[in-house]
Image (cartoon, rainbow, N blue to C red):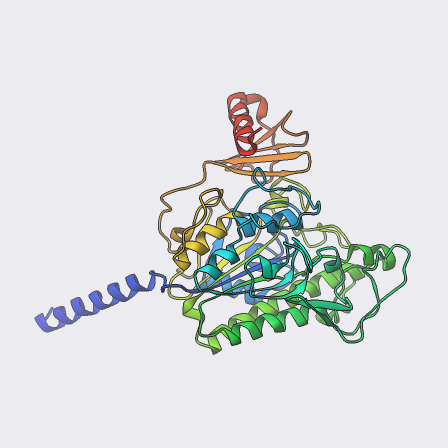
Length: 451
């Protein structure tokens, strides 16, 4: 090869190597968008095996980013799952492990508080579950400069409420009226005009436009595809959606048409978000995480089996088997996250707080259970990994230790044991042949709760 040509090749190689190396380094203080769908199952997205409902925008997100295939919710139901996410703690250390009422106290520290202190504009939309107006649990008192959505998670069952909350101000939704139904509990509308999800999504997009100078944190707690449980009891169909679209003529039960339309709308609005980030030229300075708060539901007339919403996993919402807590999760960050990649390292929603803190350049509290997964996002080996993941829900307990997963239905008195490396569906209980592993996990559960 001619010397000049060889020299040119070397220069090209060095430039390419340096540019690609730099591309893996996150820009300082990036914008952070964390999207948590509501009751979306591990098998509900095309990129996770869904074959009936198309999710092209989320599939494209996975093609351009990273699939986290062993990413877990903090719990298997709404309120404690969000509590775990916002505080970086697993169920052994949170105040509740069920949908029992809990109002944030002044001593509770949230990811939004920590990033606000670091100079981030902090916004959230959708479902809040930790306290309403006039309480210590209001989002504005827990780090969120901006909140638009529900302040009561039970009211969030209704997709056509009479109002939403903009910070501490009630905002009427035009045309919606609550019906007088004996079983409605004030959560079923007789007149449906304004769809709450659309108002919430528009508010989220406007926040990003307003804060384009950054840095900002946006928590998107969409209520799709949760059911209106009371609506299901009153009308037989709790899957509330303005239009069924392409599913209107399907030979399916009405709730299944509604569920499919909800997942489709969810996917379309992820597309709107990504398009806005590109339009504002924020895409290379913004990390987007998409996940769910727990496994799929069978409520409001919908059955999770209809679309195989838990995919290869066993169980669904309110279970601590994999189907109840393992969630479809995608991380997207052009220039930092290598496209078309996947990672099966066990991670949990309570890892978000320390990850966000590391990206924002602020110290995370010491009394948390989460570990920053920034190295995973960058395609590097994570120096520190979880010894175990822990969940509880009322009397149920579960521990994952490496590829071992143990589940108890009676407060840890007896555990089933599964080897996830060759039994992802948790079909074969091997507890009797591995008593030492069961005993080790029993001790871990005691350690996790301090009991």
